[in-house]
Image (tube, rainbow, N blue to C red; front, side, top):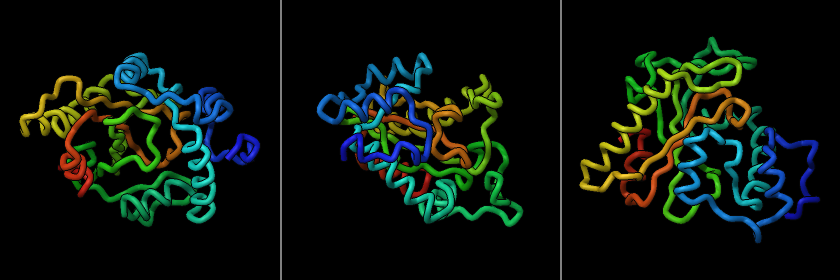
Amino acid sequence: MAENDIDWESIPFELTETDIQNIRLGDEHFVPHDWEELKNIIATNNLSILKRKPSDLKRYILWTNKTKAKYGSMTNFVCKERLHWTPLPSSIAASDPVFECKNERPFASPADYKILRNDWPYGLATGITHLVVWLKTRISVQQPEGFLLPESTELIQGFVQKTFIDRLAKEGIDTEDRVQWFKNWVGLQSVRGLDHFHVLVRDVPETMVEEWTQNGSP
């Protein structure tokens, strides 16, 4: 698919400058993010330069348009087809969905979150797996941009430590520099109605990834 195959008037989410440049350059000039680059991007919160392979991004644009046309929104699709969560009847179409929760505190109950593979991961070097943690509850952020508050960063880090790093250590796997996470701010999110953040794991056994994603928690 060439650049001129894209209807620039019907892009379903905001493209970053990096996205636009990548589409114009094409796959032949694409260099996947390696682990060290990802560490720097996350450490500096320069998340807008995260990129997908141009051909994947074009497919993602087309798929998103078709999905939104069928389900009404990406949030509806993710709830119904990926998470299998049913919003409460009190939720209205014009607002974000509200769910019955076992515990209002994020991560307090495994029933209130799920871990899934990212269906449309960023362009990552071989050996890096991209996961997404979806929550029924909301993580507190600065409004309106959606930047994490210090206490929210601490909350997520605690979950990542317990769920991913400690779990790898239990299997005798060296956890040094093995797991990273980040949360996109609102302007970078393509699914804004559901709270979520991203986890990247490097060179971990596939059995561990399957365990994390089978039921949404280990």
